[in-house]
Image 1 (cartoon, rainbow, N blue to C red):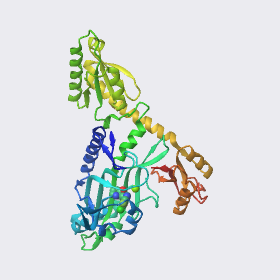
Image 2 (cartoon, protein in one colour):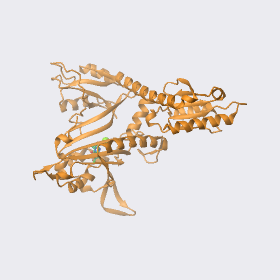
Image 3 (cartoon, protein in one colour):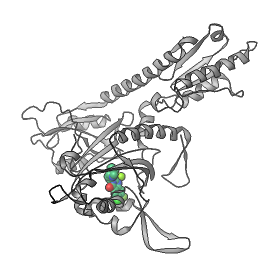
Image 4 (cartoon, protein in one colour):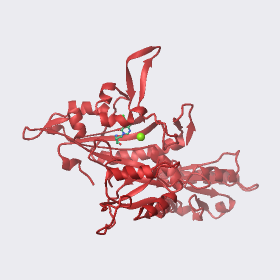
Length: 439
Ligand SMILES: O=C1CCCN[C@@H]1CCCn1cnc2cc(F)c(Cl)cc2c1=O
Ligand SMILES: [Mg+2]
C-alpha cells in the first residue's frame, strides 16, 4: 500500500492504497455534488500575514507550519507557509466574493494535500506530515442554514468555532480513539476575522455563518487496523480495487488451456456486471502461493478453477473474511458473487461494530474509569461538562501511553438519572461523553 520515503513522516501511496482513496473520493464527491457543493482549488501557499490573522487559530499550531524560505540560491523576501488547512487561504476571497445575499450560500470543497510538520511519531496513513483530504468550506446567510445536529467538547472543538461534531473511530488492538471525519459549525467567528459580510434582502449588513468539514487518507489507516487480521489486509468489497481474484489451478495432465479460458471468461462476465475482477495467470507462481499473496493483499473473494470445477461447470469461491468455501455453478456466477460480496461487506461491518461495542465500557466513578482505561477501553462516562475538569482528567491520566481525552458526546445520549455525578469531579453530571487515549 505504501513505500517509506527518505523524508521522515512522508509516505508514498502505491496503487493498492491510492485505488482505495479514489473509490472513497468518487463516492464522497458524488454525495457533496448532490448538495450543490462545488469543487475548487486554492493555492498551496499561504502568505504569513494572512496566516497570523487569527491568533488563537494558529497559536497552538505554529510549530507544525512548514515554510518556504528560499528559491534556488536566494532567500525569499518574505517566507511563505505551506497550507496546513485552508481557512486563511480561502476566507479573504470569500470576503471579496460575498457581497449580497444572492452570493449565498457559498459552498466550496477542495480535494488537496495539506502539510503539518508534526513531531509525534509518524505512522503510515494515521499520522503523516503530508496527507490528502477534502476540506469543505460553506457560508450561509443565516445560523439556521449552517446549524446541524455528536459534539466535541469546548476544549477539543475547533478554536473559534461554535461547535464541532466528529466521527470517532476506535482501534480495538491499541485501545485508541481516532478522529475519522470532523465537521465544525464556525458561527460567525471567521466572518468577523475576515470581514465576510453581505447585504441582506432588507439592505442590512450581516456576517455570514460558516461550516467546515474534512476527512483524510487517515481513514484508510483506520480501515487497515479495524478489518485486518493475522494473514494481512482485509478489504471491504466497497473499497477493494480488486474485489474478486480468479486463480487457475492447472493439473498435470488436465486441459490447462481450457482452465485458463474459463478463468478469463469468469473475469469477463464478472467485469461486465460491474464487479472489479482480475485473473492471476502468472506461470511462475503456484496456486498456493497466489492464494496467500492475494489473502495478504486483502482481496475479499477468491475464485479457484481446477479440472474438477471445469468438469462440473462450477467455480470454487473462497471468502477472505471467514475462509468459507462455496461451489458456484457457472450459470449463477454473477448473482452469487454479488450476493457474497454484499454479505462480506455487511459481515465486516457487523464484526467491526461488535468489536467496537465490546471496547465500550460505561463507568460512573473515577476508579472504574482508571480501570477501564488500563483495559484499553473507550469509556462512556457522565461528565459535568466543565473544561477545567477535562484538563484535570488529561493531567491525571498522563502516562507512557499518552493522556486520555474526551472524544465526543454521542448524539443519542443514554438516560442521565437525576443526581448522577460527574465521574471525575463529583459535580452534577450534564452529559454522557466518550473518553479514551487517542492518536
Ligand atoms: O478540521 C477542519 C475541517 C476542514 C478545514 N479545517 C478545519 C480545522 C482544522 C484545524 N486545524 C488543524 N491543524 C492545524 C495546523 C496548523 F498548522 C494550523 Cl496554522 C491550523 C490548523 C487547524 O486549524
Ligand atoms: Mg494536528
